[in-house]
Structures are given as C-alpha cells and as structure tokens.
Length: 139
Image (tube, rainbow, N blue to C red; front, side, top):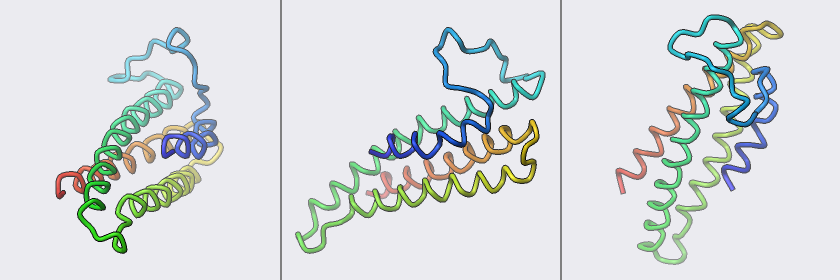
C-alpha cells in the first residue's frame, strides 16, 4: 500500500528529474562518485533517492511489524498502533513530496531543479528511515 502511494505521488516529481524509469539495459553508464554534467548529477540524485527509498521500505516494514506486535499486547479498545503508523506514513509522504517540490522552486525551470528535488527527496527519506528504525528498536 505504501509503495503504491509512494510511486503515485512521486510520478510527477520524477518528471522534474528529466529521467524516465527505464530498464537496466537502458540505464546510462554514470560514475556517481564523479558526475561530469548536469544530466549525470540529476541522474545520480535520482539513483541516491531510489536507494534511500529501498531502505525506507525495509524500515517501514520493520516498524509496521513492531506496531502490529504492540497491538497484540493492548486491550482491543486500545488497538491502533498499526493504523497510526500507516496514517503517519501517508501524511509524511505528502509532506515530503510538497516540501521537495517547494525546494525545487529555488531553481524552477532550470537544469538544476532535478538535482535540488532529488537531493531533498533523498535527505527527507533518509531522515524518515531513521525515525522508523527508532520505532522498531524501541519496541
């Protein structure tokens, strides 16, 4: 469910990157340790975000498992940990997308817009992953 929401909400943001999701064979050969032009910088920002998103999905799954476990210890009238996490994640996705879109306005229409948005998406996604890991570790 979260993955579907994530993909749908980011479809527009990926257009900013100027990069379509292609197949591995279509992927450019870019050294992200040393990108040489704006296209490569935008591509590497997108790639870094995608790696961060994979980590986020893993951390969300662990946090969800923790919340399900919390619900098992609660009286039925107190249940809601799993739903609270889902609601929070949905709200966070909206926040992240809007915040990064707003950051993109710093260079709106320019070739750096994809880089700015991509860096924002990666940064906020990594921060959220850390928050989700904390939930799992505290349980």
